[in-house]
Length: 274
View: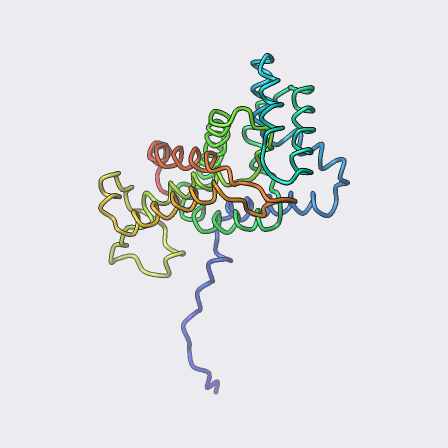
């Protein structure tokens, strides 16, 4: 006779229980960065960056060629290490001489990252906040919201800093949109009839209105911390690439606002999905 006790079946841990759409998204971001790091020659990687990254100054000089001198002056007057400033000035001259801008860069910049730290930071937050959105809405609306966030972040970044020739890269704006969408429903107390681990529940609860969110202490703390960290990171340098770079707080803000205010419309497009 088998004397082994009949133990309850163990739940799967969250990292192995993500929706397929989130897992694919994370695999895509990590795969692209690994391809750039370990496979592509430097020349090809630079070409990829020039064709997929979002460069505000390129758009400005495309629509207003007479402002090319302002772009060069802004690059030359940047503060920092002399070699870095010289490299930025040289790149600004390249941008002014090759002003062709492509619409797809408002989305494709989100596929590229400056370092492993950068991409891992983004995929961790994507796993945490993209998963509840994907479970609630299904893969297509999850993907659409991430795309809208990237577009909104890119547009706001170009609008606020149009003379910048620093390439904008990273999925942070799209992740911020998913984070804002999740904030509309994940901080509510679950109904008593829902059982199981939090990460295994299908979210059926209605979205909280703005007044309801303001009355939710956990949600207010989360939103306050998010805004504060973006403000701090926007004025200091972080090692996200080959050299220190400031975080594009305006892109994060654009994605967050898009996700926060547009998610209710996307949420109403279809029923809740597992």
